Length: 101
Image: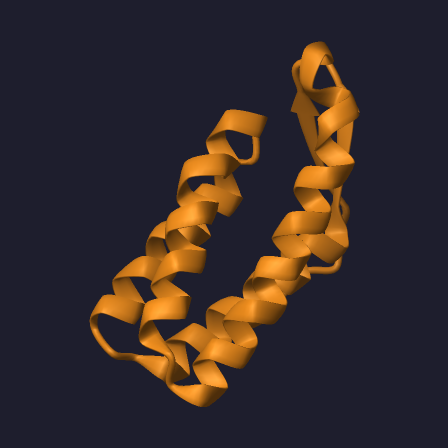
């Protein structure tokens, strides 16, 4: 995985909301990691659903893409993939920076 910074341009009207959105995404990543470790597929699916719905709304397409993958893996019972996806989400969030457009 690359460690390059990822710059996402968000609508000016959403810029003040982005720090809270990203903090919530970090919380979801921790929840997903715990759900994967516990085999809690329902909790993992809920995380995926939340990320899918919110990512695009804020301009973070990758968050929505990961959310769809999380939901699919949870429905398929693939806890190993869920752990990998939690790591991918955490890595993305560590590198992303929002700028107002």
